[in-house]
Length: 611
Image 1 (cartoon, rainbow, N blue to C red):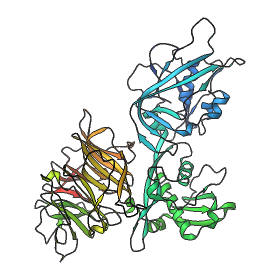
Image 2: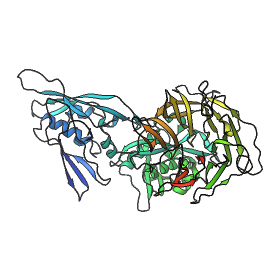
Image 3: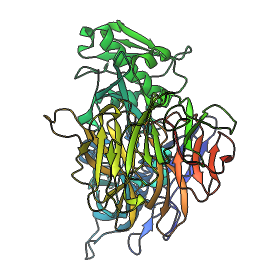
Image 4: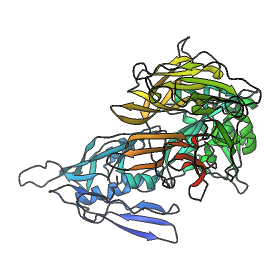
């Protein structure tokens, strides 16, 4: 429950003593807090280097109520694994019933603290109430899932004075913790857990497709063990209906296990309890794959995992290389080419790893052999097929990326009055299904074409708040990013795609949620990782900017792409090593790692990577 320094009336509420040799910072709540008067904000602890751990001081003897409040709030932003120091500020009953892991509420500038109504009269005061308030930014729930929020936060904390000891302690408080945004960024880190799509398989062998499920864990409190426990507990509620876990129900870490860490060979042994002794090798390999994908997201140098049953019995082991052949996930797939439309509106391509700028027409009827002018394109994940929307936006065509083919009839047409009110840029998932929206304001729809050749099937979107202006399928086939326009504003929404168990019903996009809640105009976007997107948009009252966002609506704590003006379209790959590409006022430009934007083709438009 620390707070940010921005805005509001300030006074100093604590000091930090740093022990450089031990890499520890001890927080002491030793300054005063008003018992009456205006709102005051609790200052946050300074941002620390990742190697520095922060611990709080217990309450001093005869600490006044303001000092108890200050010390407790500071203790909640420390790296104390079980919040033992924070509990020392509580009465015995409150310490027993308080559940800090239940939730974390994130406020814009941290909680303001003001005394509530106090008893009157001249009798000695033995109880006090304080009110914590602020502006909500987000909540992290008991499953460690992040959700953007807005509105006000207002909760009461009650203190009482023990009749025997004369010490003030907190006896009533809200469950969970609350803190400012900067404290949250210092204390928590986002990690992708991995499960398998229930309805998506790829390749001749039918590989399962890994799906990222981002959660937030405390970054300096045994994060590897936290992440493993979270993975074993199952997917978050939002993703759960469309994914599966290979771990048998009830699987857990063995009792007392903590401090999981790779050995000097970058291997990790994970001791499990439950029904794991009965599983076969194939299922065990899938379990190890989930663990390896998850933990390499946290610790990229991890090379192998070994699953152990009771008594240290080895169940199976798996290397990172074998994991990639066990399951398919987008961030491990490196596209062969970048594609875009040249000045003649033909589809051309450049090798992804090339630094050159000489693009050549693709084979087939939409490239070297074609005369069809295009407005937008999408290339299948295997780079064998292309879908293109004609220059007038009316018609969708699907063709092979092979020489000698012919362009057949349109597979879908729009009746929109203008080119901008017709078909959006199409998008492919790893199953080979093709998705596209019709932006006709009189009859807006989202369609899917199975394997790109099936009859267009309308996709239900029961909670769609406007018309779709852009569609980008996640490779896993269970999530979709939509730019939706309503009342002149364009928002970025993420939806879950449900197909299984619908008894012949059409597929549906459900539980739409915002991925960029502070942007009121989203110009363009693209997937840029297993759970990350790159977005170009406008903040309320601000200027256009390019940034990375997570599918859960959180903002990543890292640098944004280099600024670029006049961006009309953006293309990224889930493989984060591949350069970002944009269509701007300078034509097609790309952003190699560690460099500035470079011109590729001054007449080019509509850049895409496969997908």
